[in-house]
Image 1 (tube, rainbow, N blue to C red):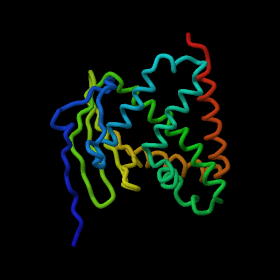
Image 2: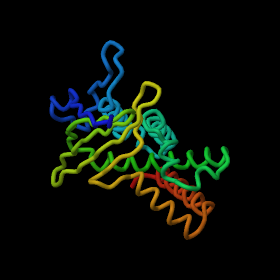
Image 3: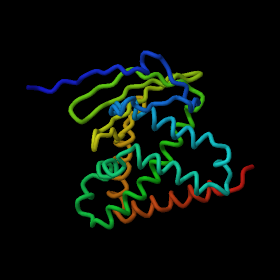
Image 4: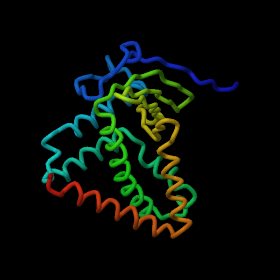
Length: 217
């Protein structure tokens, strides 16, 4: 029998909106009930906002600690290994275990900067949870961010593993972050090489660290 998408409208949808700057909304499931995909997304957004809005962590001297906090959120909320594998594509199975782990470590840093940047862009906006689509072990949480001048559609794609929901892609106004990474990686590998891709990723990571550690104007 053909599997059908099941639409789930979470409690937050009934409430209407979540203000992204509000870090007091609890998404813990009551009585030990396994949280939904929507609740997993809520929790991740709130955790990111908590770190990004921490004035103490914005100081250059605590840049390393801030990076660590963001990366820990990603590692506990995002299936970064799955994203890295899908983003790299065909070269992935040709890599040794050591090279795969090294690539994943670099990819986590890219995700940190991408996710942090997206949340900062919408820091003063409201996020409306529109519903949750389910099919087997996959889900898509559909949201809309209400900005001052423009609204943005942000959909989170998740996979269910080990009794938890893990984000493996984010689609912003129809553009998939995962597909965007894969397109860039494929282009660089074709024009240079896999080694050239890794060098570019390492250079970007170093540049980001130096920028974060520079004194504030």
